Image 1 (cartoon, helix red, strand yellow):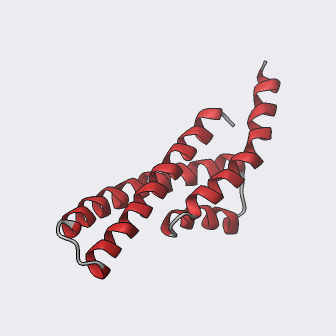
Image 2: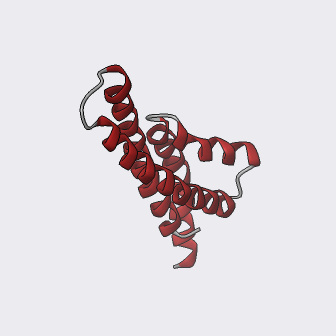
Image 3: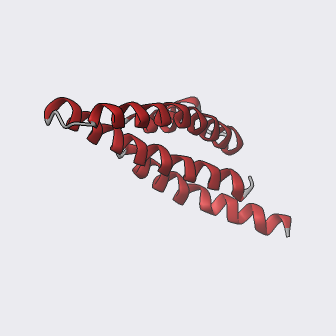
Amino acid sequence: MKKSVLTRYRVMAYVTGVLLILLTLGMIGKYVLELDGAADFTYVVSLAHGWLYVVYLVCAFDLGNKAKWPVGKQLWVLLAGTVPTAAFFVERRISRELEAKVSDGAAVAA
């Protein structure tokens, strides 16, 4: 497995995680604090998160296929982008697990 597959996944996990936290804060501002401009902020962030979550799904699915994960693990990683902060924890765990495989693959190729 190439390192670029893991890097794409990691970038999208962070982007998705940050946008989901921003969306959560926007919703709190909109519905709980009733802040002016929170509705527009929430609208923009929700659009960005929605489209970039699709890119995250593609990257995570590609990583799962190349890592030959079972379906349950792949679903766990795919759903991590829907729970605020979960993407960060799942990304860290997956990265630690796959760093060895990426390093072994580079050593075998050399």
